[in-house]
Length: 349
Image (cartoon, rainbow, N blue to C red; front, side, top):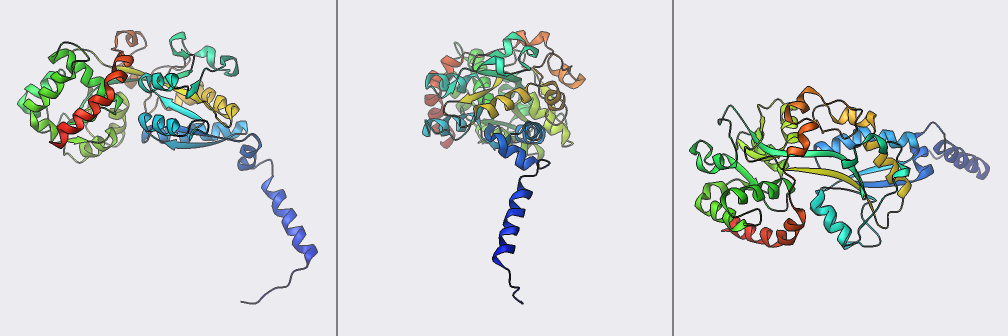
């Protein structure tokens, strides 16, 4: 390759030109650099895809950069606790179980609602002092009607032979799973804390342990492959499976459907609180929630100006939200580590 000589003056001109090009106002990258960047933890899968696709460009228009970092709520909590004062994330996405622990350990801070222009558009129940509720996850049972009959509730999954070997469960680190287990503890034991009744149930029906896996995402893969026909889920999981062409249906357990609001939180020690507020505001905006409510995410909108789709209304209406089962997370958190260890021991045999 032939070398081309370049003068010191020309070299300086090229450097100046490159710097100027990087600062062009039409560049979204440059705009994002003006106000800084936020790292936002988001649940993997559908949540990650939706938030990256919808919220990243919205923040870019405001002059902020946004890095979406997929992590389950328990993992978010563990990482932030391990890096106090220098959090791994500027914003967290959590249900009440993890939020309670985060508050107790001073990992998140109360927000200033006056910095959110869309705050007045969400109902008072969704105006959390530690951050806005962006959706309510409604939990129940997913099943494949090609393989099994429609279950009435949790008892069917253990007592009806039609489901033998076709049900999958996850461990107590999963919010979806632990909410189901507390409901099963009510049915077979003395109350939601009577997890011995649940463990005894698994010992009585050992085939239920055959399909214990590490996450709901793993369960969805097994469901698509036809290896299982039933798992504990949110309505969003079923919406995702349907978007992939799967024959999947959602069942409200006859004993009640567990539910959990999901909130965005501002981490203590965040390097860019302004960007986090912009992120929160975008997530509760009509523009964003009108997109989040569509397949494959089908998230329940908390913005009062966003109409429910027929598909979401078939799962739950705004009027029905108060009839759902909202677990006692203080009780769950008090026992959760013990339940995790006992369940893992049970599964390991």
